[in-house]
Image (cartoon, rainbow, N blue to C red):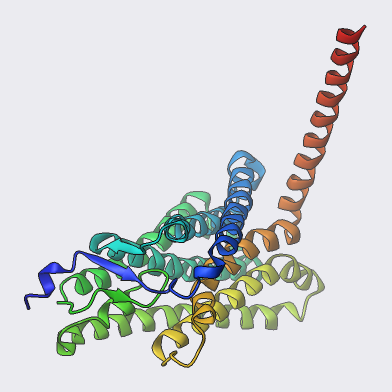
Length: 327
């Protein structure tokens, strides 16, 4: 019990085997984070500034991209700082906050994907009711709720973890997650309620996943009978399915590695698997929607043309001014 009071910081030991490659990892991580910021912020601004994109599907996409920024911001700044620092520690409260951000980000992604599936189900299978059910005001509230509810559920898990007495301060990962903190408990029987609430949380989001699968199976069945619905499905639902499969693959693979013994795997492989859900989906999702959805694609092309024409005018003006100064 005396050891409990001295645990005010956690030591993150996931970077111990990367001493010889930290410069490369720092550069790649910084490039990855900058790419995530640029592509997500760009699409968020396009959706917000263009009134023609203020439709339910695009409002949900905007929330999706914002959640990607929320989750990655909870990881990359601290990770980049650790790569430059000889000591990899995080405060007790900071570790709990990071675990809250990581889990709520992942759960919110699944909630928003479920909303997207419901949105496509209404648009394709019940088009006459679509605008009355999915109004802008209601979709905005649903998008906010899809973030708030996971945040509250995960906050409950983190609160229970904060009450557990810990006997070690070493976390063998790059960042804090709830499971890794609970494993440090002095008395395993104290974590029984944590396990129950965690399993309830898992069941809730497994049900989310089953709802998404059912929605798209029903959509596929409906779309096979109509050429128009088939085209609509290919245009708007395929990006959702790619995002869903990418998310599920990365999260489930990471979950399996955490729950199973991973001592036989190289630390670098474990680290990559642990952060792949913070690399692949936040970059792939904006690119998929940006290239696949016609309205967003047209806006991007329009901005490219405008940017190119403005650059041409600036270069031409600079050339004329240079000629005048030299004459």
